[in-house]
Length: 72
Image (cartoon, rainbow, N blue to C red; front, top):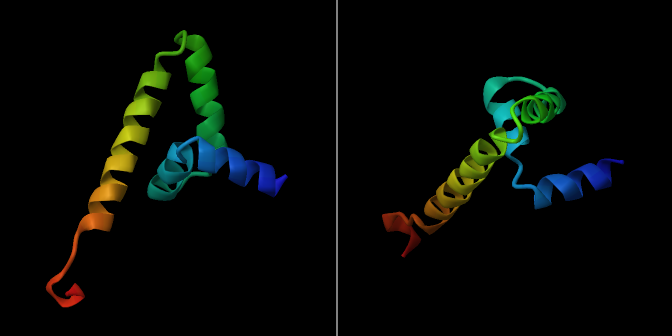
């Protein structure tokens, strides 16, 4: 079960996990809340999820490309 969860998280950007780590909540409760809110609002939180995934991807690439003076 953990392998399936890891696979899904790695393919689904890991937004809920990142939010759980930053806010100190369990990622499963954030996922459930996201699913319930998506059903109640006809899927509009999906746009917020995609924006967060895009932001995480951009920040990951920015952190990776930063070099210090000592890396030469």
